[in-house]
Image (tube, rainbow, N blue to C red; front, side, top):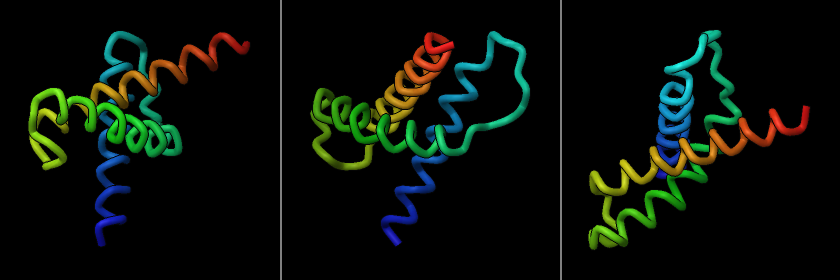
Length: 88
């Protein structure tokens, strides 16, 4: 059950990252769910862990970890977009 929760949280955070990054551009309304999952899980792990430890919350689920997860996912999603545009 924990793994399912982690996957769903990763999808939600990845979707939020794509939503945040598409605010200033013309949106197609399509979500890349693979990118959402990868960015959400990677961003949650790195960003959430770093923000939680900096805030002194430890490894408990706190608002600082959630904010860090979203920022981490935004960074991963933006980096992937930059890498994809650079390859063209």
